[in-house]
Length: 236
Image (cartoon, rainbow, N blue to C red; front, side, top):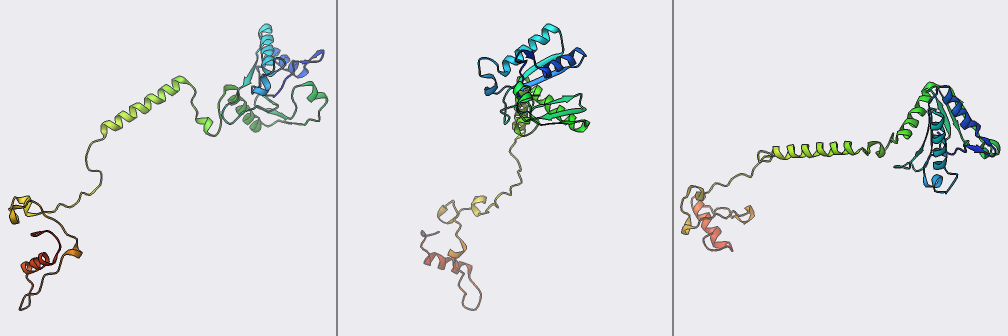
């Protein structure tokens, strides 16, 4: 997985690329992934899209298992800047060097070759995800781009919504109803002046009944006193 590959180094071939084709002649499947952001493909010539086309054309002509692809920007990953090689899930080269003449012969570059299956397999899994255009973390990992998968998901949501609406019925939702006020009107008993309503007053507006002569309280006297002193309509 590299950032840049030059298939020609002045008047000779790129030794790294030739090594990849030599491995393919031995039966090794070779996959090369290049950056596909605008800065790597916009120029008229000499860009990664041209290199990918030439590699794939040569592999087809020689009937070799070599394939090159561009990694298109997607989600939070806008540019491929990895340089390295993964070999059979057992070794990995992590390097700062592009497969270009200037990087190999003029720049001060550094690379580390690790022969560790655990580390190599993690790099291989990351390469496979990039090769297939899959996200491995964050919100992009949950993105569905397959039209059939999206259609199936929408159908599932629609069916679930229809079932939920069908099962919704008026009934006990755990809410206690207000207590009913029982009045004589409920029993069709005639009220004063044939009124069919009862007005409920707050406690602070209701006067205590007056004490009768001789001790007790008179409910009727208390009611009359309330009506006489209150400001409400007569008879309330």
